[in-house]
Length: 363
Ligand code: PMP
Image 1 (cartoon, rainbow, N blue to C red):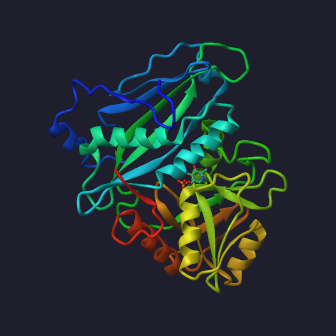
Image 2 (cartoon, rainbow, N blue to C red):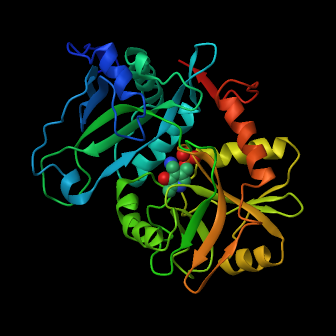
Image 3 (tube, rainbow, N blue to C red):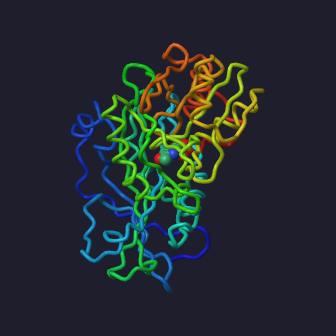
């Protein structure tokens, strides 16, 4: 255990890493979240003791007692961010301190202990350092980092656990859009909502995603890639997508996005707001009713809409389907404003243009 904002991570190199040839084969077409690196970070927490046994060690199964609290009451939070290998060989992360801060707010909502934010960022740097060879070399690939924390205490009472495990695993991922950026269809769920006021919508909490699977299946059955959730009170206002925030582009160039509250405060969302605003574009956070979206699309006031998040950065929305109808965004192809903002952000993330914001963090 150590005090302050850092933990002393003990490095225990994997004695049996995969060979370079095996790794190369695994990384040809890694897809998303199927291939994992040789190491993981683990750190334990116990009430009264604090954080201890912080390590970087061989990635391996985690022994679990059947009465571990997380298996029963789902006390678990996570994060997701990427490390990139830039053209000049440097390795960078995008805004890891923002993920650290969100991990803290998620922990608060789930009555979990706080991992010092410096230790969170440090754990990512250490894992990337030992597994550097796993970062894809190509323009579009990246190393997806998945920090998470769960209640490991062996106890069936319903109360915050007194013991936790923090883990980071890493997965090389290919391009989200193999054949260029392609607009997605979205399904407006008539039956399910994601988050109620006072609920857990703003936390990156595993249970939110468990609850989104059935509506996501409904979206797929309706030929859509993603589900759009409406608010839980009036089922009238657009909240967000299953795993992305949403923006509307009005005909005067204004960007509009739903306000924070029940939605996940996306780091991509915030970066887009800041960039667009600094580029002289009006950016407004306000509630948007589904009926307004539909009517403004029909009369040409909203010609583009896009989803945003770490996985695909910015994804144009092509068609919106709902019970009883559908409408298109413009002609259903990727809009110019959307693609312009996408390029602006990706160029900063990939080190191809200057970063006046200090978002890009060298490893
Ligand atoms: N909303 C939800 C529900 C998400 O899961 C994500 C992905 N983390 C986002 C929005 C986008 O967040 P970020 O830009 O931080 O990836």
